[in-house]
Length: 414
Image 1 (cartoon, rainbow, N blue to C red):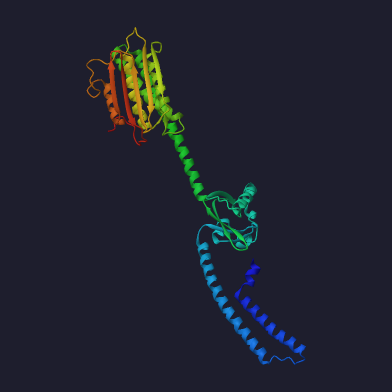
Image 2 (image 1 turned 30 degrees about the vertical axis):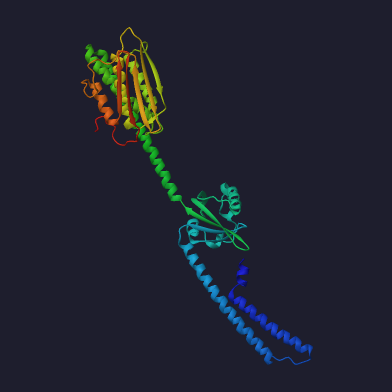
């Protein structure tokens, strides 16, 4: 390739043309003079005219070729200046796999001098673990297959691994085919990403541990309240303590679910709901008289919606267990959890009990703490609700839009 470049140089072409012209004129006239038995002389007018014509023609050819070479050289320098100023490593590789040229960014990234790599096979840059892949991809690229934004790890001159994003293009000349490789160094981005992922993992562990500790502290409070319930003789006070106990356990079940979950933002609400109802049955010790019918779809929910929704269910199921059933009748509590395509969650709780008292009108107008709490929580969730109560039982259903709401999950926020 370089030999042809030398032959096609403007000076070389003009000089070869001049020497050929001189040789042809002088040689042909010398041979003609010998054949005709004439004396050969460089002063012959025909010879001088020929030599002058060849000289002028060679000078003209040289001038034209020089101007053309100058224009091509300026274009090449312009292109090279662009390649040398960008921070992406560029490699030009022949179809035989020989590195024909590299830019300054390659030298900066890999710490090789140009003389060390130009003229070598590209495998010189590969290590044992990516040697086979390098040859395979090289053949695929020459055949026209593309690997856009392919990630590679290649060692620099000192053996340090460098993460790269490679892109390629085929340059086809009349005689040769070149593979143009661009390599962007993403080592710093990879290290930053790894640090962020590590930091995120640490924060998730810490958050999980916090929720675990909250759950344990709530369990301690629940235990203390249970001891107080066992020692209390006043039935009305005992009932209020049990109600408070179930509310604490409802919140504790959410924190336990968070601790066990892989994602702190997507909690399996159906699992939390089942555990909540099981705890309530255990607290009120009516497992033999109350049947449960749970139809719960596998649904995830944000903690800031999970806590108020769990407390609503806790209040409604507690009220059912306390007031809906007579002692001589086996009870049934049915709970359904579903979600539609618009991420609207619907929860319904129904029973076959005695129904709500006649004086009950709406949640907001009821003076009991449990129903007032349910009304507040429904407003926090921006939920719509419906109550259908007869002597054959009561059905309470509410629906709200599932969101990834951030911030406090306080039940008292507006």
